[in-house]
Length: 248
Image 1 (cartoon, rainbow, N blue to C red):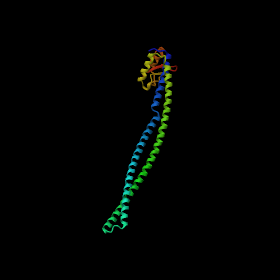
Image 2: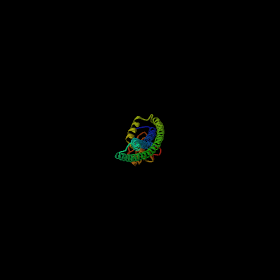
Image 3: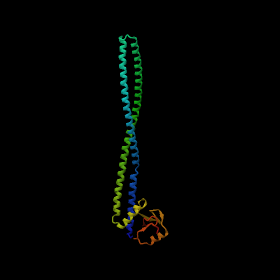
Image 4: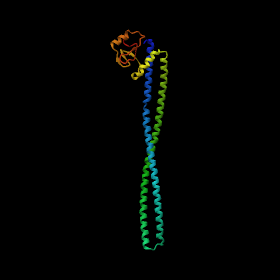
């Protein structure tokens, strides 16, 4: 293939801009803010789930406490009625009196047991409420961090987007007017080559694409070839562009 030497040098500019675009894409996909945001978002979801479970447990404890308090009131009301009967003097039968006193003792023990259960539930609720408060504080902090990271991500993406738009425009400018067959060969090589490099400079007798020293035979061929001939590296098969310090 033949191409004007200046066109071959401009191809190196195109390659430089393509490499810049690759770096920008890599930077965009590996932004530290993305990983941090994902981790923080997952942590926030876990905090929300944990808070939801605690709220459900608190609601269950509240219902159980209200039930027990209702039982306490029922026992207390029955105890009050029995005490009223006992103090009214209406009961004269010894066996009935003994039975009433026994029932009052049973009610007193039942009331004490229920009140102990209520106190235990109240303590558990206090612990759960303290835990919920801690989870809510952590959730608020995580929400603020998600917002901060989202803003940092958006700013970084906007900066990358601006750099990419500038590089795309420069690339189009440098590629304009280049021979179609040269660009097609370059794009084909770049698509199949490592690191997306389709053209490299021959500098100091080394291919800058594969970083390998060019053999003596290849150097001799490059030295005697016409300036218009498009050279290829024997090692990596990239387009090899002669420059001022090629060492020929």
